[in-house]
Image (cartoon, rainbow, N blue to C red; front, side, top):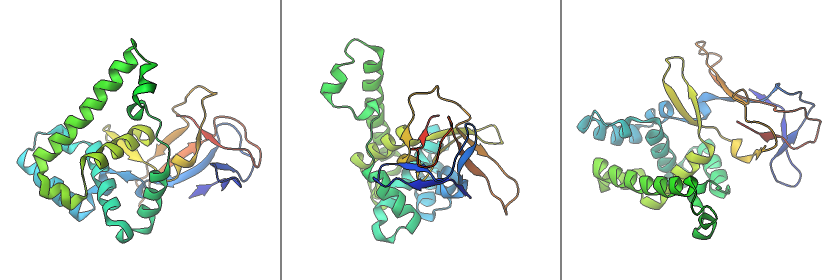
Length: 233
């Protein structure tokens, strides 16, 4: 595990604990610590309830998607409260206090500024789609299964907004797209002053079980000790 960061004294974000040059990794997070479909499938309750729905409708891409598995796992662990694992509880607390800024959560007044643009049309379309997605879940799993998983419509919308803002999409060695949410990245300030780079966040997959695959975050600029570290991807 690699961590060249330290909490900022003001409580806002992280700063460099040592000088970091552009392109140099400053944080490495084990993939097993991230929210992924694979990790969700190791949760017996999530696997059971989603598995039953998939067995009834094996051709549903929605039920089998990484996004659905990650969201269901997030909400199930959140429903456990103090019974959730320490790692899950800490990250869910952080996500719960994070400011969601995706256009999907904008108020009517904010959306009004986009009047006449395709962005407003797309935002309204995606909002409507999320509500349709929840209705699909309700139909496919049933109210009892959703209750067991701690899923209701407001919670589902929150989790999808979290995924929209903090979700990372990579390509697995199999060539299949993969969705993940990494703990801690929500605390890094966004860097809008540089061009987003695909190299800022990457997954190094390993077939060595003793090493494991890692999500690597690299610097988009040079940083001195004590400077706020920002993330672009």
